[in-house]
Length: 166
Image 1 (cartoon, rainbow, N blue to C red):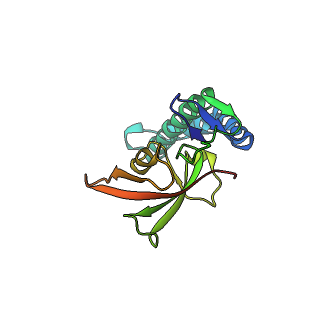
Image 2 (image 1 turned 90 degrees about the vertical axis):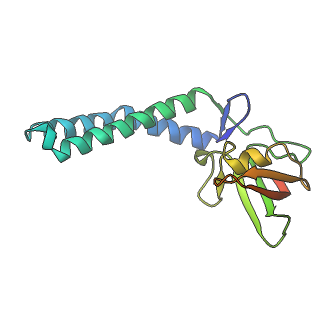
Image 3 (image 1 turned 90 degrees about the horizontal axis):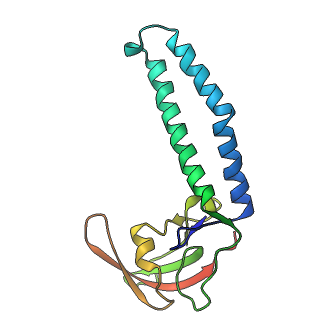
């Protein structure tokens, strides 16, 4: 999955189908299963001290959160490949290789996209992450800066930026 500034989410057909199937399961059989778990736990007695009931309710909450996330994601999805930058400018949907502090022996290659977009064989960084926001819009050969969680700045040099073909 790749997000662009227009808040469009680009998905491959495979990723779209996978997410749509997950949503169908969560809104169908999974809801029935969790309702049955809650009902069974409720019959065990006092709800204040019923660990099974509270665990089932927590599971239900997580499940409903995922339903909302998937619904929003699929509403904004476009199936196909995100438009790639022709001039080597870093954009979502690209595999980017960077060198930390300009040291070409200390490099990182990653896909700039959301995790749902990629297969497990490539490390993925969100376009909204500190590193993602720092490198977006920079061209190969340029230096970019981003803020670390401790508030300090880190610099990287863009070595390569290619469209993802996963």
